[in-house]
Image 1 (cartoon, helix red, strand yellow):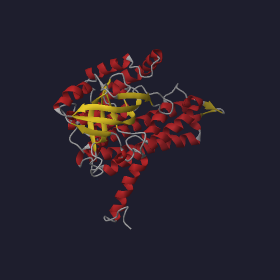
Image 2 (tube, rainbow, N blue to C red; image 1 turned 60 degrees about the vertical axis):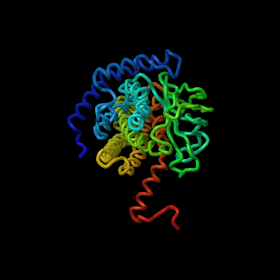
Image 3 (cartoon, rainbow, N blue to C red; image 1 turned 135 degrees about the vertical axis):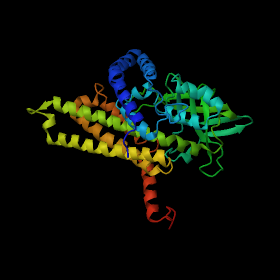
Image 4 (cartoon, rainbow, N blue to C red; image 1 turned 90 degrees about the vertical axis):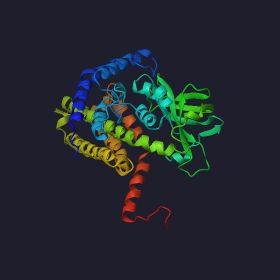
Length: 408
């Protein structure tokens, strides 16, 4: 069922070659340029070199399912490509213009943007000329339930006035970030899933203040995860995406593909961690024998292979269902992979760290960074508990269609 198409296989072969010939050799150059700059949000020239080469090779915007804007790959065709880029998560996704949150924002602008939005923001994003942020999470409320969002979007004539505070707005400190997609409340009195709307807001609009960058387990990510204040920010009514009250509808359209991209990159990260664990176990000797001879290490290697394969199959099933029956009907599988993939990758990365000893927790290897960001993924796009709730509700209703948490 999940046999790659001829087109998908060709893209995989080309992308694997690009990784071997360009991306992996660029990793030390990337880190050297970042260190020399002294700026955690520096945009290293090697990344632009990689982007130019990727465009030249036709490895560009591979995520985009719409033939007008990308190669038109299905989710099932793209999923293995996202996995490949997950082996070098700091640079590979952006090198082929397939990095979050730009991918999700580009899909939103494609599906719901006006012609002006597409001309001003979508086309430069597709060209890799600018970056964008997605402002949804807020520090004052539990944003895992997005109905809690408080940022106000009040109509004033031909404008909306935005007031509120966001955080974890990824990409907001990227040197090329020019625009945000912001979710807020336009009508607090409407039904709870019709109160929210999304708007396109240039990041340099008066009243927007980027307060600070938020570190991830001590790491200052290059793209930044910003706390942002909106203080009487005025935007024209044309900033609205779709219509008032469509925020939840847009977010579901955005998050389905985004979650599968994250999960496949997590599998790629786990694969690289497993390779590193094997190499280290074969090279290091303790008490007269290679670590690879130890029964517990062999158990870890065997279990890692089983867990990666199981998670990959579940993720490919989700991709297949998204392509054939749509995101809504694939919501159980999407929720399942969102739980399974980061937890699987965390376990394998943790064991690879253990095999590397002191080296595993430092910066000489990427494992500590992998672990920090994979742990964050258990919160991004909704925490594990939200997805488990979705799964549990579905299972309960499978046995009793009338079941409700409010039923006594």
